[in-house]
Length: 310
Image: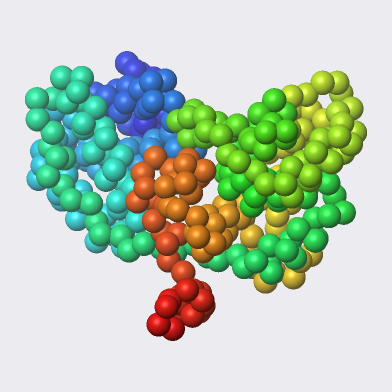
């Protein structure tokens, strides 16, 4: 928290307050008991540190001194500072979780954040990747089996990039047509893969992957440089950007956009939303509902093809 000092220590600029200790304990709870991903924990830490700075400036150096009025003014300050509604919502979610935690631990009798309302955020539709663009990307990747396997896995199974680079060979069950991935919160899920994905992964695992293992055994599906460790998330981004340029796609292409394409194309192809939710690993079906948006042309084609009074 502020000054990155340890409990009981004082930095040259900012004293380590009771509020800092309470927030640090909450972050430890999220890491140890809730098993939140490192990126999520980092985001929570930043937002809660900003919140603590404002509260301490107001003379609220202990969560037990924070009132509903303090929180309302803090939230209004975020809006006045010009922060996007999505950012305000993310910060408020972090703060509300913190105060709920203190109530559960009986540090507080009442939750001062209970009545705060989340800012309304319009659903932001994912930037589309068309079928022709996916085909062009696959064609650009064919010269390098590892790159092709990565693209096929991201688009063909809809896994997150962190899940793809964390995947072990033992999690790939080609005969059964399944991959077993560990997602957010260390939750495991099984995702089906089709025959085209199976063929690409089988070919990659039989030759190219083995050729990369120069320094001995490695369980990673995608070994890192020289066969050591794992391919990093950053390296996966670089690979996709390079392939996008080679494919003539006129914008940055991230792994997450391929995950969006996986879900969107499934829904447009008639997949039910609940099945897509399970494959994506979404805890809440409302998160998956964004993929029900399709363009007018697709709606027209669906109507013309299926409506009895067309």
